[in-house]
Length: 476
Image 1 (cartoon, rainbow, N blue to C red):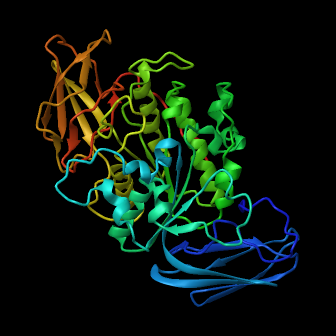
Image 2 (spheres, one colour; image 1 turned 135 degrees about the vertical axis):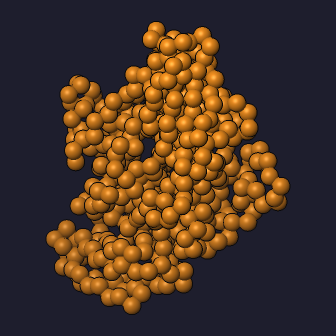
C-alpha cells in the first residue's frame, strides 16, 4: 500500500504529522484507523487515543505508522497524543463517518455561491440558501484540500474546521449538504474532505499507470492526454491512508467539451480502481453525479457539438454503474438556466448522494436511491413497452402533465416525439406516424428536463434503446 506523506526533509528529528491529521478531525468509526508521520530513524513513537496505546519505531526512511483498533462513533471531543522526542497533542477529535469528495467546479462550488442563488420555492424560513446563517453543528467537520496545502506539515495542525463561518463559506456545497444529511440520518459525527479543482479533466486525478492497467486504451491505441496524474500526487496521495468510508465524485463537464463517450467510462474505471488500491479497499463505495442539462451545442470548442453530445457522455457515466460498489444520481431537474454550467441546487445533489450511501453503504432498508432506470423493452403492435428498475413504488409524472422527452423511431432510425403513458410499472410509447416502431429514447437531448419520475421523487435516468455504448469491465 502507498502511504501518502509530504515532501520535506525532517531536519529537526522530531515527530511530524501530515496535514490531514489535525485538531478537530473526525476519525472513521468501525474500522482500523492509521496514524502516521515521520521521526528520527529508529525513534520510538507512541500514540494514545480513546483508551488505546500503540507503539512503533520509525523505519530506515524515518517513516512510522500505527493503526488504532476499530471504534464506535463518539461525539465527545477527545485528545489524540503522539509522543516521541517531542509530543504532539491533537484536540477536539470525534469518531464517526468520513468521506472524500472530488471532481471539478461543480464539486468545488462553494457554499458562499450557494447563498447567492435564487431562493427555492419553499414556505419555510430556513431554506438551503440560508444555510450559512445557521450552520453551527460541531458534529460536522470539514477539510479543504488545495494544490499546495498538503505538501508540507503544519505545526499548528489546523486543517480541520467545524462546518461554519468562513471555513464553510469556502467549502464544497455538495459535500457539505451530503455531510449534513448523513449526520442527521445516522446521528453520528461526519467529516468531509473536499479535494476538487475547477475546470479539471478526469485524467489528472489518477496516475498514468492507472490508465495503463486498463487494456481498452492499449487495444485501441488511445493515448491519455490532459496531464494524467497532475493533481494525484498533490491532492490525493497525501490523504492516504487516512481512514475514510468512501468517495463522492462530480466531474464530466470538461470531458463533455471533448465529446467523450465510452473512453470516459474506462477512465472512470481507471480512477476508481486506483483510488481503491491506494486505500487498500477494493470495495470502497464510489458515488457520483451525472452532469446536468447545459447548452453544449452552443459552445465553441475543439470538436463540433450537437444536442446529442451531452446525452452520449451521460450514457458513458451510466455505464460506469457496472463497476462494483458504485452509484449515480441524476440531475436533469437541477438546472434553472441551461446557459449556466454550474447549477445552483447543490443541497439536492448532496441529499441524493446521501440516499445512495444510506441504502448501499449503511444498509438502510426502504431507502430508494435512484429514479426509474431502463431495464428492457418489447414491441406490441404500434407501441414500445418500456420496463424500469426502481419503480416498485410506482411511476409518475412529476407535474401531473403528460410525460415529456420520449421519442420513438421505426427501422429508418428517424426519431419523432412520442406519446408516453404510464401503465403500472411500465411506460407505453407510440407515435401516430410510426406503425412499426423499432427503438425509443428518453431525455436524449442536452436540453431535456423531463417530468418522468418514480413516486419517491427521483427523476428517471436518460437512455436510448438503439445502438447503446458497450463497456467491458476490466478484471481487476
